Image (cartoon, rainbow, N blue to C red):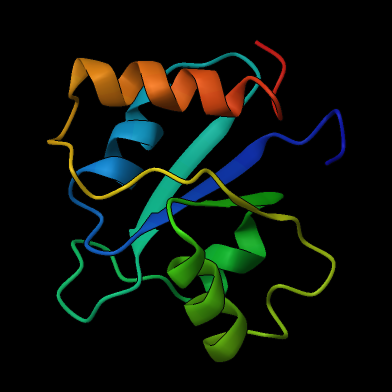
Length: 112
């Protein structure tokens, strides 16, 4: 991942709990801009090629999300890192444990 990457896209299934919480962690962040989307038809915001084109780095919560993106949007993902954070769908929006887990997993890829 480029050290100067600033546009982060977080993907989960419904874009209601995990990816939206991840996006909120970067509200008013001086270095990173974050958006989020979901892979399922009923998602709050459904992922598009445009979302993927905007992003410097794509973070998914589970491998199935990366598989869906690679199947539906192979061109939009060309040359982009897709990083699986391995966060199961068992948290509510802004859950404190989820926020801690996201910070811990993202620390490996992003500078504070």
